[in-house]
Image (tube, rainbow, N blue to C red):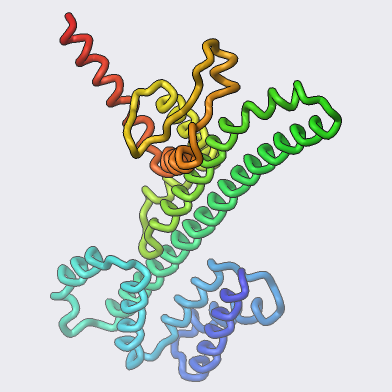
Length: 307
């Protein structure tokens, strides 16, 4: 149990001590006393133990304390759930039973809210842990990309220092491609961070947990962003999209090898445009696939008109 959990356990122990002498439910008091002894003896306590102690204390409460405790628990539940419409609907359906509510019904309602609170806290905690794990995983992948880029440039520099200019020249030709890939990878990671932060921090949503459980797809988000950026680079090179918003690329030498080696933006401004669009290709994960879909649709329309 983390530090804040132990602090909450101490609070429950204090409440138990305040109720021990006025409690009339011996069974609940014995259960709570056993849990308190374990905690004070230094045994490892879990959230399940905290839940058992919480429910035992609720059972120990005198009747005159119950309505106030129910109100406090319901307020906590609404805060944790974020959207308590389902609970409010249930309370409306239960309203006939709340008029002159019996002690047994009130205690059962309190136990139900305590159970739902602990379940919500568990789901929220799992979701936050998964969010943090996936964020760290994507950042590690991006750092790997940065390390590979740094290694690439270091090898080129070392070759030049040892006068291996021919091999270094070949590596130099890949700089534009590696820079484009890195810009797309950065966009992919920032897009992932934005998606993770947009997930709700209250309530429970199984769809959120299912989305977060796809760790492998999230881990390779920077790689996909880099690949999309390279594909967009090729789209610019092919001249499929043109205009003042898009970079102009220069490569007037025929041959595939020369295309790979010499393809680069024409001016410094075009370099800026290329980096921005490479970042967008990684950040907006549907941008490049949608662009390809539009190009395919345009090609099919042209072919249909020709036939």
